[in-house]
Amino acid sequence: MLRRLDTLIAPVVAIVFSIVFASFILLAFGANPLDTFLRMFEYATTPRSMALILNSSTTYYFSAVAVAIGFKMNLFNIGVNGQYRLATAVAALVAGYITFPGYIGIPIIIFISMLVGAAWAGIAAWLKVVRGVSEVISTIMLNFIAIGLIAYLMAPSVLGVQTAENVIGTPIIPEGNRIPEITLGNAPIPVYGMILLAVALGFAYWYILNRTRFGFDLRAVGMSPTAAVASGVNVKRMTVYAMLLSGAVAGLVGLPLLLGAQYTFTVNFPGNYGFTGIAIALLGRNHPVGIAFGALLWAFLDVSAQILDLIGVPREVIVIMQGVIVLSVVIAYEVTRRIKVRRQQAAVGMAGHQ
Image (cartoon, rainbow, N blue to C red; front, side):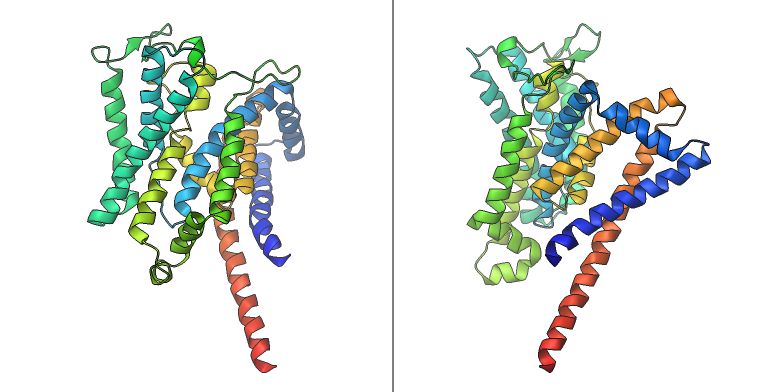
């Protein structure tokens, strides 16, 4: 019971503190905090907004799980941005230039995107285990290299074309290579079909971590590499596996938007989902259910921010709230960790006096 409370206290405290902090900011702008939050909630619970929240949270979930896999081994995969952008660009080129019979192209495109993401993360894994290069440095550099490689591939003289919006991108993906959408009630906007894959990924992530030897080794290396080596775990091999798996999941990040809405990869394709995934993974404490709630909360704040401009409130308040949530949850986790250590020390002390 106490363990569950320790898990819930940190995010709850962070969210409450961010609401209080945002309330003071709203008062400074002359806005009524209670009325503002009520308007945000009313706007976010309309059918259109709820569909948008589910769509955004699907993308955020893939990104956060990709980051969380690295976190479980104390690996900071900050290269999710480059991994998913390059993977999505290659997948878009394959889907745009090759027509597959029926819907057989969908699993092929998903596999290709995951393969490219894993390969790009694999470079950072190789540099770490062979040359001792920090994954933070290598993944940051690989982000910039990925941007340059995408720009080369998108050039009209190479594989890019000019889209209907007069921007450079990939050919429009044919109907057979698109993932079917889901219509919820009277919502005017369909929900990405890849939300089902996100649910399956969450279950697979939980099962592998908690019910397999691989997951045990992964967590063991993250807790204590020295102890893991003593128990016969190959730390370098697990590092490579973790980075490859993280990169493969990162390859899924851009597919909901690519195969469910835009049907082309352009130079304007969103490129910051990776950093958002870091925040959501921290908020969800790397747990699949916690990440799901974190992704929904983040998407809720993003969508509800759209009403602020109409009521004369700067929407930057939402960005401030999101930043405060991240900082607060990190502090709250550290506080709860210290309380847990003191509780354990007190228990050991009491046992010693008996």
